[in-house]
Amino acid sequence: MKNYYITTPIYYVNDVPHIGHAYTSLACDVMARFKRLDGYDVMFLSGTDEHGQKIEKSAVKAGMDPQAFTDKVSQNFRDLLKTLNVSNDDFIRTTEARHKKACQALWDALLARGEIYLGKYAGWYAVRDEAYYGEDELKDGPGGKKIAPSGAECEWVEEPSYFFKLSAWADRLLAFYDQNPDFILPHTRRNEVVSFVKSGMRDLSVSRTALSWGVPVPNEPAHVMYVWLDALTNYITAVGYPDMQADGYKKFWPADVHMVGKDILRFHAVYWPAFLMAAGLEPPKRVFAHGWWTNEGQKISKSLGNVIDPYEVIATYGLDQTRYFLMREVPFGNDGDFSREAMVRRINSDLANGIGNLAQRTLSQIAKNCGGKVPAHGAFTDADEALLSRARGLVPQLRSLFDAQGFSRALDHIWDVIGAADRYVDEQAPWALKKTDIARMETVLYVLAETLRHLGVVLQPFMPDAAARLLDQLAVPADARAFEHIEGDAYALQSGTPLPAPQGIFPRYIENAA
Ligand code: ME8
Image (cartoon, rainbow, N blue to C red; front, side):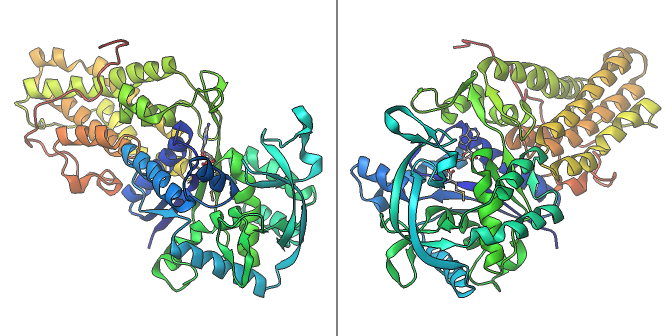
């Protein structure tokens, strides 16, 4: 059985969903769709993080009870996923009963194993990050304020608190990173985690008494769980924990990838495996920390008023165009700059002039010169075989790139094949063969159509609608669009199959077209 479990972060509901949230969810969607096409049974989870001081404050500000507030705003994140055509299998909210049960069971396991003790916290806390900081990590800000490395303001907190014995886990974490060199990707991010762990970790405060908006600590009515312990647990709640005999748990835990932004790597690559190992559970197989998007070179922030609204972007440029741009523009893992000029350039050169034009040229010649049917073909020449073998080579290449979440490189490879097909059309000039050698013209158009079938199948994870339109135009049956159908020739296009009338797939984007 091939199973695959991938997760997005669960998003804080205090924010309006923006392009950054869209990005992580899209990357997971591309990965999940790829694995499904490759025959895996996939579990793809997203959701919302609804407890803690930050959310409680936002609810108060909105003049609402926190439950009513989170019910309302959580829906915005669900709606965004739908608009993005994200194929998540479950959507978890940390205010659900199943989650409270999982958190309390994990707490009990940690307590029973002697990993948690009662003490008193006196130190700094940043509500914006929901994170504790040591004095040595902070800078002085205006008005004597203490500022965290993230830029968040800190406040002094003194309260009774349970602690998790994080300091005792440093060596075991370092050994775990050593034994699992791909646990943290990209590798450049690994070093910062390792040096944090080596720098000497303090025990971690895992309960709060200053607020009540959280999962109650079992048998301790004055304490609620620290929101990150609560939030991280969502990944096991959704597969059935604490029932470790549940089908979901047996099939999907440990998760294959937790996809996160680089801002929350420490929580996922240090705290989370430590909590799990301390509770006697397996840590996830990988945490991938992707980069940060800026807007035309500037940090995206509410106070600068330059938050990019994914709905507006999709309405302006199109959904599949946006998905493509975000996955292609920067190597996955690096920071990226969202610029409208770059978006338009990608749409026009890669989509309209690239795959769009290749499909249009091929399909319109077939419609005109081959009676609207998949053309017949004779023996393949070396040039034909060369192009077909590049198309057939796509899946194995993409598999290895996807294994390390190399989405933009995967698209580079796909576009190399599109480039090779463009050169092939120019060299073979089927429009000229029409006058001299009809049989050869048909073979050339067949080779192009078959190449397009491969391209349509591998483009599905990135651009599900556009790829489906391409495959529809090639009359590829809906149940013959997986990778197994392009490995080998068994499902190759059949000469004589009637094709629908060709339609453009990617129009050019013309500024101020309205
Ligand atoms: O941190 N560029 O939630 P959050 C790229 N609730 N990605 C961005 C981005 C940007 N400019 N802005 C946001 C939390 N993101 C916690 C997570 S998980 C157990 C709990 C993405 O709503 C990126 O994935 O602040 C980042 O990690 C995430 O949104 C933070 O979402």
